Image (cartoon, rainbow, N blue to C red; front, side, top):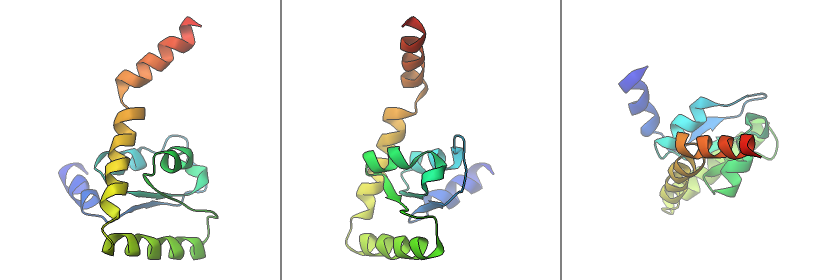
Length: 113
């Protein structure tokens, strides 16, 4: 909880969330908001955003083999200095898509229509 949790997440190379079902996965938003690339399954409901904003990796299938392959991909990106870009993109995704000002504006447009 609190500072301990934020320190733990912010020191990760990648945040893994291979869920089989999610509504709005706050843990992914927390990790992305700390600039940590995210590895997600499609059922997290975040795959579209992660892929579109190049904020991490989307698992093709939610299997242990896919998770293992993604770990190798993360390792390669780390040692070729490409991981920071994914983390920067993750933070940008949160700022651009999930801040309250953007959400409020979108809701206003929906209700005004």
